[in-house]
Length: 266
Image (tube, rainbow, N blue to C red; front, side, top):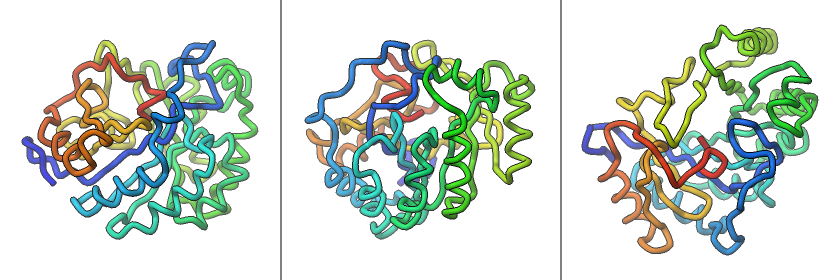
């Protein structure tokens, strides 16, 4: 599948929940957010059926996101369902790793190939400050469990305010090098103002080569993170929603007023 700018669309990011067990300061307010109703969230069967159609149309790479995907009950079952779909050759997940100690091996056994782990600092006090409720030891144990299970290469996602030369970022980089992890520095973004940048160490944020579609937890296919364009799977069906999203994928990001990072997966 190619869009109007000759970008080959092969990558699907699936948000399976808008819920999270952290409250990161740049992602959601301390008091939490208004959550989606249970009946509005796609079932595993709906997600798998959509992915099967997407794969038939040319999608071969899938990343599971949230919110925090590991808080979705039965997430291992969904991973197994997607892993069995013909044509999916790359199945990954972005997680904060809080629950990864318990789930790394079951996820690997189910067919998950690798993980990206969000980690903005390795200082315990700073981690608690950024996440409001998190314990960095849970993340460290989750990373070790992922390595043991073979969910590799493990990539660390580190959000930076200005650059990768910030003190927290430099410590994360050193931690990654010491532990055979890859690290990507993600500029702090703002959906409402359209502020975004290219990920250092990755391909995200480079609109000219963007090959992504996004499926939100409540079934909206979005062609761009920084756009309000979206198509309802339940109303249109998977194929039509995908075709419309590709046909209307913008050349570059603008602004989004109807999404948040916690419910679209970044």
